[in-house]
Amino acid sequence: MARGLFVTGTGTEVGKTVVAATIARALASEGQRVAVFKPAVTGLDEGVETDHELLRRASGSGQSDEEIAPYRYGPPASPHLAAAMAGEEIDPERLRRAAGAAAADADVTVCEGVGGLLVPLSPGYLVRDLAADLGHPLVVVASPGLGTINHTLLTVEAARAAGLEVAAIVLNPWPDEPTEIEHNNRETIANLASLPVLTLPRIDLTDPDTWPPLTLTGRFPSI
Ligand SMILES: Nc1ncnc2c1ncn2[C@@H]1O[C@H](COP(=O)(O)OP(=O)(O)O)[C@@H](O)[C@H]1O
Ligand SMILES: [Mg+2]
Image (tube, rainbow, N blue to C red; front, side, top):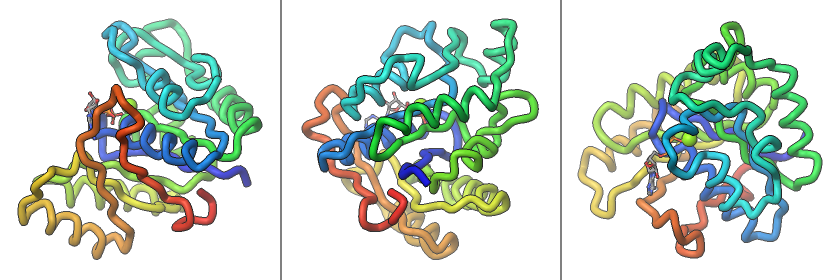
């Protein structure tokens, strides 16, 4: 089995790309050849650095846009809808082939999902189905504050219900001065999910040299 991990989250905008980029950067700093993969990118119309661009910059990978993210759409919609608006449907087999091709030239692959685990890529194929097909352990990104216990545990339960292994939770962005609520959220999630709960502070995205080494190596044999 190829080495890699699949970064998912409790939803959109929780920091999946930033966490995946930080992990990719840490692996690359260890001297590993890192491939990155993102099944579908939406919201290209918004004119900011896209997920696949940040993942490529962080990992030092020479992959093309197409090799990182086979499906790319302008509107900031769910991938199944963005594809339909473009008059097509995302093909699971094409995703599996593209992920395999990305992994072929690398020591380890960092995949980022889209939205959360139950987001459809096509009407009958969810992000969770792709995660299962790729076979990598999951990293679940969640926010540190109020509401996160429920969202995080629901995501872990949805993963485990499909037989997926969760490697760790990452609470992001972890505040410089966490309150009792954030400390307790971290401890409660760790206890109820029986998982390591890591944290990532706010980072300067323009300067990867300053990013903390968010490393899972050694902790999980498949990573
Ligand atoms: N640790 C962090 N440091 C700095 N900015 C962050 C951090 N986490 C998230 N952000 C910012 O918050 C927004 C959402 O993060 P992103 O990684 O794109 O979320 P997702 O991939 O889950 O949709 C982005 O603008 C991103 O730059
Ligand atoms: Mg993202």
